[in-house]
Length: 241
Image 1 (cartoon, rainbow, N blue to C red):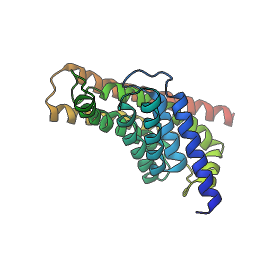
Image 2 (tube, rainbow, N blue to C red):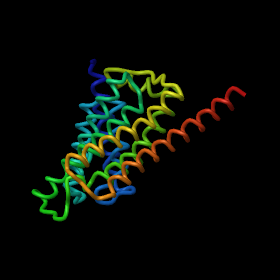
Image 3 (tube, rainbow, N blue to C red):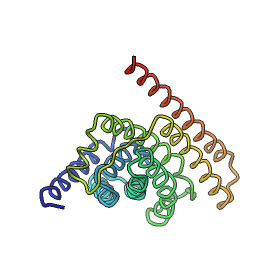
């Protein structure tokens, strides 16, 4: 990588860190910060998993030091940031996989890791291993949806590849069709449903809330997939007409 591209990459990283700190209070409550997940996915797609991990770590530390945010600023960001970039590159540039990585990395892994951190380090009582799963997952769905729409727009007009070519090691064309993206969005709900079922079995949870949550996730992503399919079909029909 030449020096100019390396410098530009660091500039973009710094801008994303600053933007992440500024917009993180939007819609934020403890255990839910949708805009942090938006930044994670953007950074993963622009710069890759390692830079996304660095970005999430820097934002988390700054928020903890200057905004008084608990360690959830880190546990609720770093795992999703890295997995988002990994799945995006493993899928050869499928944007929906960047979102999926964020949902699983934060909504499941980060949520579980947050329990011992908040219980044994911060001394918070009344928590369980899966206490943060609903709020973290919901936050990633909000932030991930915004990021997906934003990046899809950039991809459709060719700007995403230009950005990646100017600052990143790799660039991709997201050639996913409407049917492929629709199926992928619906599949996220199924994957999360299965993950929650496995976790419920491992931790022997008896509350009906988890059953409702798993079903709700399938319904939410199924509806999102249908809406995505209809909207894009109408756009294609209008452009052809």
